[in-house]
Length: 501
Image 1 (cartoon, rainbow, N blue to C red):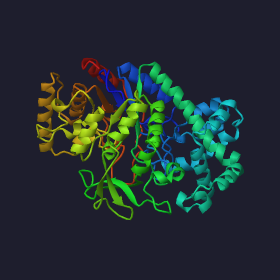
Image 2: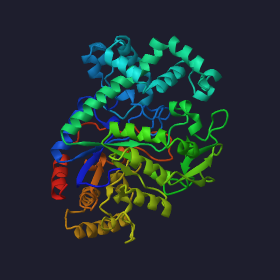
Image 3: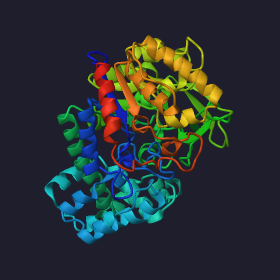
Image 4: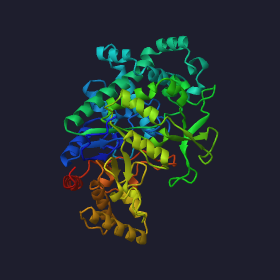
């Protein structure tokens, strides 16, 4: 794993879905290219995104039907029009007013349009044939074809399909080859082609992509359907224990994610091949891979599958350095960031240190009056990535507006002391001023990399929050109404240059 030759840099966190545009959700189209150009102009070297996976029930990018898939909603419709796969009238019908993402409406309209595009696509195209023959998305295409026919979760499929009996799968594939199987492959083919083009553009302009992979996969996914022996399941292929985190500052009942847990003994017996393949694929998609919930690779919280909250879970041992030794041996050039937030203990801290991976530091958590707080800039080491906040936090402005006047007065005092100690200055009177000061402070930490959420760069309030953990509804919908304004980007450019990033 890459642990040396790190140079100072800055980036912006903005998921593809949050880009502005005319089609109801951000895409890999012209706005994505404009965003890359904005990053280059302001001196940023990184663009961090959330998982690109095809979302399932709940619309979370951290719960996918396939951990290696791309989200069909991100396919650029104007690119399909250029290929004559949709016409002008169909493209016009897909336009929506600027607004947060409406996933329900998108589900009803977008897949119907993509099916019309597929109906005009030549499935005998040599590149597409090669894509099919690669087998990369074989399980995904079969899984989605079965869901199209039977609906619901895969554990309710007829047994022959639920348990993936070879003859039944062979016959099913032949029966739906053109109507379903190739449709789902078409979506991944188009996504992958468009993503490669965008990533090449970013890299050519000196921008590296930081991609996010969830630790766990969804219960109703092709990943579990294809390899159930790799997970802690009963004979009916239902989880015996599920993932989550114990009670913390986000939730008094903890977070019950519901993801099946890995059977690490089986994975270990296979030299962690499944994980190595997953990391390798992520390394092809992104320049830097952020592993979400890194602490679960040291010890993970196991909750009984029939529990209603995460209160009664237990900590169990994960693979630890065994996995990272295998990654180091087989993927020596992979660049990984460890998302090491939440409840940490000596074990996970030792794993992070031994693996050499940079962890994450969140300035929003720094100003509690404790001089030993690990998120205070003076306590942040070089081998780390500093953020003002993440997609799971409120925006910086939203965070500050929740403070009473007395709390904000104390916060300002601490923040002024911090930036003075960093040798920089900006006036801090209003909460908007404090957001800029937080960004400035982050950029002047020792961290080799600083990533600022786009909401903080342009000073948006809590209506722009991306996700509220433990709250099931209303998440992942944030979109920019327009590209970041010139004034905000000019200020960011000035701060990046002054902080030698």
